[in-house]
Length: 307
Image (cartoon, rainbow, N blue to C red; front, side, top):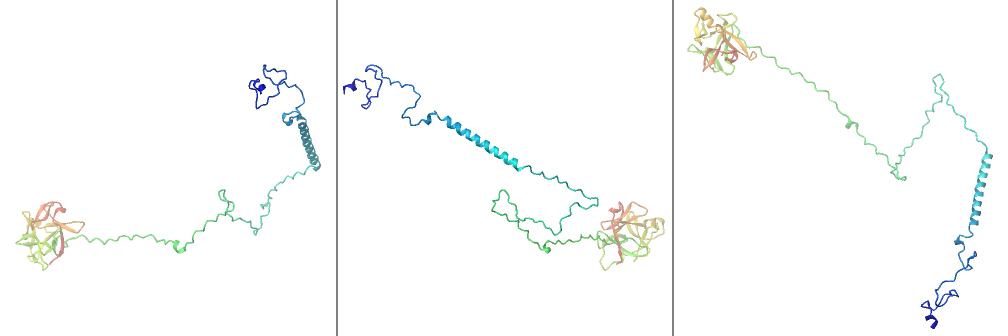
């Protein structure tokens, strides 16, 4: 078609839109101007969507709603006015207690019992359909098992100590044997006229027996006379204990007198010289002599029965 070739490619599928009739083939292509009119297009299918002509129904609807609200309010006012005013509850005053001391209200009867619910309360964490069981009761204990036996306080019996033996002593007129407190079986005896400390058998020896006499040089002390040699006494001479015959001299009486001194809480005694107050009888290698020493350091003796 020669006409299609002369339109410079404006052919679209063999159809050419209607343009202005005044347009020439060489001039620009412009659409035909639309005349300004107030009437809508005849073929417009959606005239309500353009917002033209819809304000009148809206005003009518709003006016109807306002009239309905006003009518409802008027009806409520009329009903409230026809109901009238309700009486106000009278003020309740609690009567004061009378002067006779009785309560203003009578107490409830003693037989009245207030029902108490024993159902456990449902906490917020427990579902409504779940009932919490009560705590189990503690097991009953036998009164025998729970009974405690109370023992009376133990009374401390006072410790009864045996009475202490009387202190040893040399009784004037008795016949004794002097046994060493630290060497049992060893007694004072004379042999070859010398005083000795030797073991004496149970059969006994007359040389170890002495009679206790009142002190020849001091009446508060004692003198020891030999049993098998009457008139012979133990005396110190040159600081040695010897068995000599009484010659009646003052020196002999002083040398043959000894004062017993108890030691070790009265369990033993020592012999102190009268004319040498600081000297006591001491056993030295089996021989008896007087030595300057304390009473506790001297040889301790225990009076025994003569063998």
